[in-house]
Length: 287
Ligand code: GUN
Image (tube, rainbow, N blue to C red; front, side, top):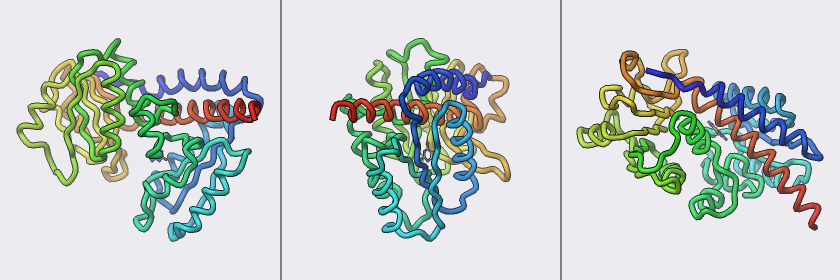
C-alpha cells in the first residue's frame, strides 16, 4: 500500500497561492462562520487560520452559540455579503441539528461562496459556467492527478451519500473522459455483493460517507487509486471510510485520513479566496 502525501500536495499549492496573494492590491479577507462547540469544526478552523496566515489571507472568525437562531445567522451573513472588505464567506459544517445546512449556505452571496457549496455555484460548475471549483471535489482531483497522468477511460466509482456531491464529482471526472458509477452509502452498514463487484472493477474509488470501516480492502483490486474523503471518529482517532488495517500488503494507492483530502481542501479554499478577491477588485475597477 502506498499513501498519497496530501500535506505535500497542499504545501506545493499553498506556495503558488501565496505568490498570487502577494500580487493583489489588498489582503484577501475570508469570513468563517462557526456555530457551536463541535471539537472537529474548531480544529478545522484553526488549521484554516494557520494556513491562511502562511499565504497572506486574513481569516476573520465569527463564532455563534450552538443555540443561535436562523434569523441571527441570516443577518450576520447578510452583513458579510454586503461588506466590501470581506471577499469570501464560509459556514463551517456540520451545523447543529436545528439549522438546515443547505438553507444557511444558500444565504451566502454566490460571488462570495469560497467553498463552492452554494447550489447556484454547483449548478454552474456542472454546466461548465465560470465559477470557483468546489473545494472538496477539487482536492480529490488534485490527489488523483498526483498519481494518475490522465483519468480518460478510467473506471471511477464514487461511494457517497449526497446527490449534489455525486453530480459535481461525476462532472469533474466526465469532462476528463472517465466512466463514472455511483454507489450510495445512505442507511447502509456494508456494501451488497453487486456493489462489491462494481467496486472491484474500479481503477479509481472516491468515498465520502463518514462511516468508519465501511470499505474493506477485500473489495478493492490491486493498482486501484483510492481517495478517502470520509471523516469519522474511532475513539480519539480520526479515521476515513476505508479500513486500511488489511491493506498493508496490497498494491493499492490510498489517500490517508488524516493527511489526505483535508490539507488539500484547505489549500483549495485559499486558492478560491485569492481568486474571488481578484475578481472583486477587477469588478470594482470596472464600475
Ligand atoms: N466541514 C468539513 N469540511 C468542510 C469544508 O470543506 N468546508 C466547510 N464549510 N465545512 C466543512
